[in-house]
Length: 180
Image (tube, rainbow, N blue to C red; front, side, top):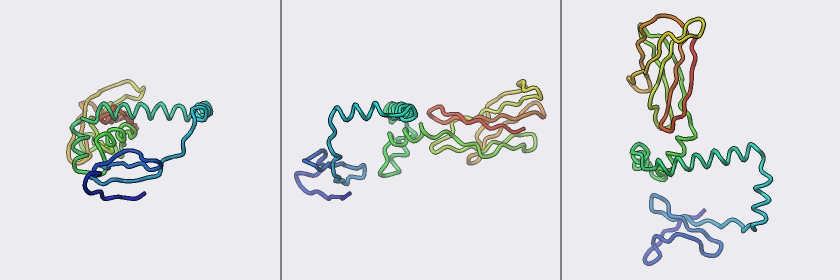
């Protein structure tokens, strides 16, 4: 891949000339790459028919991620990240966020509180804590409050039982963590 600095009338050029493709990056540079070999409609149709069920499912998930990215690329969180990170667009951040569910690293009792450490590649939007009895019946359920860094805190009214923590991100991905 070659980076090209243009001057004069061809500055900002994008597109294809012969076997070369010119792409303009967000930082203003232009990248030139070789075009892929042309494939006939018949070859494309045959390749599509040969895909496994897993490949087809992955393609559908990628279409969903792309749709999410197009719809949410104007979300202020993604726009702000794109402004401070050259070479990535708000669309890139939205698609990446769609693919990555939040992670719950720790759930611990801390005095009268329950603390949950949760992260995401973009942002954890909410954490819910549920307390279950020995028979897995819900004793109490509530939203945790964000404290310092990646920590969330919930103060239960009941003692004991199994703790179930759930964390959400902007696209709605959810992760569950059970502490017995």
